[in-house]
Image 1: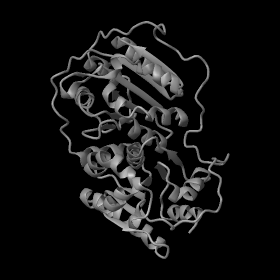
Image 2: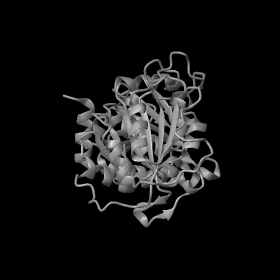
Image 3: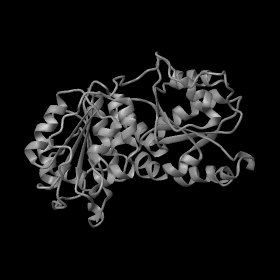
Image 4: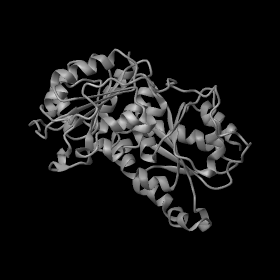
Length: 386
């Protein structure tokens, strides 16, 4: 089957959001998704970012698929275990089977041997695609992921798809969920470019100031104390609290923002979380979603594990975001500055990046009281409405 025909088959089965990392075994499929007039394809920087994007998109009402080479299963193990499977987030994993039958380049042989075992270990059901059963395979996947409320996989051996010579360059009709280009005008700063940032408030004070600016906007909270402190300040159905899957807050938020472009989406991130998947900011900047607001509470430490130092003590994350191409960037150190900057961002087109430098003080707050399925269900209900 051609990639074009398989994309049409996926669309008929209701799949309407795609994120992935390339593999030559499905290059024709990816080329057709990149130029498809209706189906969005996000070229994620890593496979676990694609898993986060898919989870956020499902929470926003989409039916997602993740495309990856089987080597990407290794990259995705934690995201699948402590995000997709723990919360129960349906997604179709289209996994190419490099090293199939022990015939491939040396770097693919071991992964080819263990790919089915990795899926078994995760408890992810899978089918091996064959040329004469593609319709049945996709139908099975759609039914199984919905019934189980979890990801399922289709393993794709070599030779399943042939190329029609489609261009890999996106056409003008390609569906950009957020088509805006990053602005080239000077970005507003709350402080001079070279001035050092000195933390003056705790993260709890900064989060309190930020939460007071929110209405019904969905907010994705990084795992650890950002989630716990925000929940203690104002527990809302519109809050998606991350319990595991460190490093995915911005990817999940990007999936939500792209899935519901008419609603502002806020990410309450931490410096350690962002540093763990720093490349995702290039996905944000490239897609330039107008409804995306990225707040990073930076205490230069990994707070949940004992305040070990993070690299943000030496790297200004706001400058990284500015260099990547966020529309506006602000760096603040006072509670009233947090509030003012967020109000401005909520009233204007993004993507925006707000860095709040905070102390290492941690409030004495309990863990999140809700189960992962409860967090999922009330958040998705708030996204989809009555």
